[in-house]
Length: 243
Image (tube, rainbow, N blue to C red; front, side, top):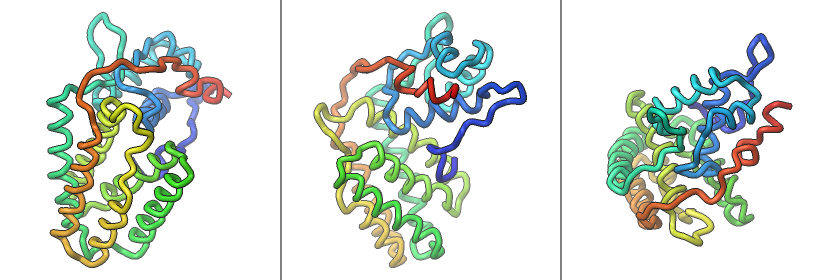
């Protein structure tokens, strides 16, 4: 997954239809941006109507999303966006601390100028979005920061693991964030990390990630809840997809 995943357009098949890959990317993006809440039902017929495709195409997309741990598919049940348990949530944060901590440690003092400037831009845009109360954009820029770290990880396997863990973390934040909390913005966290990456202080960069993820985890209330909005046509923008 590369920078700009959230803005990718649809590539229609030769028959002029949206492909299963398009559906995968659109639903994954909706989950990452916390528009599609955990436990939201994804009926095949409804998804087909939203994207204007057959149920066979929808099934392919749902199978791939299940393999990516974005949704849960069970025999004779409607697919749902994943809703990790409390234990899995804690394990997700624990794994991400280990993986992302190691990645920033490896990257400290080794970022090229272009990558550093790209990170710096996303940090600035995240702060600006927060100040403008634009939460969707704030989430987008925050995710971009971590995807850039994954994309440029010296160890490609760790990078792939971080990409997966960023998605899993986004799901659990959408599910468990404190009621009434308008934003999970942690002022100064990303700027602080960037400073350590630039200075080459590997241990400080690792500790900055630990602090960032510990602070995020502290904003969660670990109890189950149902999604408030299950209007898939509105959430996934069905009309614009078929336009």
